[in-house]
Image (cartoon, rainbow, N blue to C red):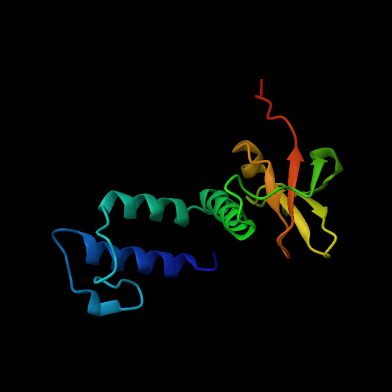
Length: 151
């Protein structure tokens, strides 16, 4: 979740060199990235799809939230995902608009008892994500809202 765009691009190009059938170079050129003895073969289209998701800030944010959700699920031992501590209406969240002229999506924040915040973005709302986690602890919250089509 902390990789820069440059690191993502580099990892993508190295993985393409490693797994492309026409370019197949030995894994020893970058042992930290790929270990051929334990890595299953990857399809080039899978690499391309991963790069497209991770290089786009909006899709990466949705991916990171889904990753956080799956991490919470595995930490709680539940196969159904984490059990939300509360159900809170989006109306109870504080709206935080990005700087004027900025392309940053609108965010809504709700305080957590640990001092952190539950943050949901416009992108997550449009993706119909309701279960979000605190940015500082493992607490989960169900955000109540309805997605409405614009006229």
